[in-house]
Length: 350
Image (cartoon, rainbow, N blue to C red; front, top):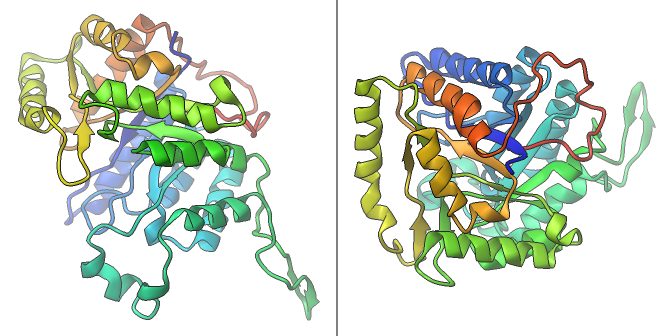
């Protein structure tokens, strides 16, 4: 039974009119809350025409919503200073009443050789883009000292740890893993696991089998064992409420991306999951046969990259009203008066 349902978007915009794309994204999050989704997630898109600062957008979303959880999936830490990011994440968590889910990943920034002079002009050769960078962020979010100075200097009062401090945030840090090694690392460090539509071919050349293996490796290493939280994210496009023109567009989109799903791609042997297009009943049947999906009770279905606002509205509505219920999910009560910060240690996620 599906327990938590979320969605993920990259928030595309026209370079000549960036506000509209950002506003459309905020409207989608608001719609998601109205439809009863448990969570909405944003991807980072640096030096592209997609949201480059999800944390800032989620701060805005926190003031337009009251219940839906807000997440990043994921923040690539190679672009971030862990201390500054810890401050930003805690600020949004406080503003949202404990609704932030922060997904992170490690590794050098994309096209690092092209961007290093702008990003790290003086320190590029000293930057550590490995797991230690993530550990620094975790330590700071958990309230470990960031400075050895504390006290009052004139009228300025200083703290040893990052301010604001949001105690429940550390339990809502998620790691985007693509390999068995990274899944085990996330489990060893007590994080939650985000597994998406891209995994490394290690166990076989079957996407679902590799995803299931990563989930098993994560939970075997995690202190919570089989209770450790995992969220799956696949591209899912229900067509129940779509027009004939939309159905044709959706199928053409998926067909154009199908070749990359037929075999491992590149030197890293990455596997891409096929996009799931069809009626909610058809998609539910395919998911229930999916070895990775059968291991989870939380999902964050990814919206396709290049569709129109009306398409996203139809897809989200079909997911919430048809596909989710077909998978056993029940929508959250958008009118509930429950305090979203009442359980900040175990915030919901999709």
